Image 1 (tube, rainbow, N blue to C red):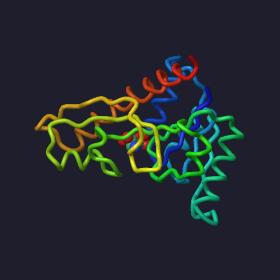
Image 2: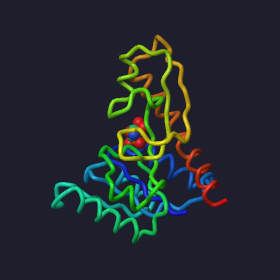
Image 3: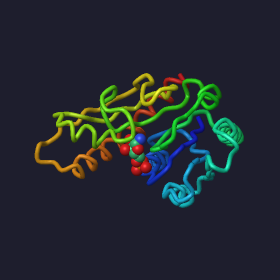
Image 4: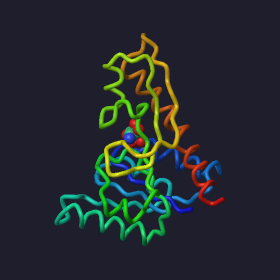
Length: 190
Ligand code: GRF
């Protein structure tokens, strides 16, 4: 199976997936990394790993539709079977969803359906809940509403700062995401 990763920023989750492939823990090939942000650190990570990277800035397209069609075209050229969102900070619209039905997944830093949206970690922390976690889910037209594939809970130590919680969430993400992708791909191949 060929994976295409979409990411807007640091790309630590993309890195965890790259590492899992390189370690032989995820039998897939990452054929490209796509970003909407030309200064995203994930592009450096792609270069270091020898993975083709391509930036699609929405503002350089006539409209959203054309932007998505250009990305679809690129993914098809790179023979992508599955799209992995790893900190991609824009909504995926109908063209991509139709081109890759049930084949786009995302990781969210909270226990969905609790705390959807951009600030899942901070929102949970500020709400004072005793547990939060990480969710891997299929992407649909809503914001963090697609079918849940895997979740891992994290108990919040009352002593933790927000930075402590963020660190813990990312540790869990870097384990859970590659594992879940590996498991999911097996069910597709079977
Ligand atoms: C992660 O916390 C992920 O759950 C969320 O965006 C963040 C991306 O971090 N969707 P990184 O770019 O993978 O380091």
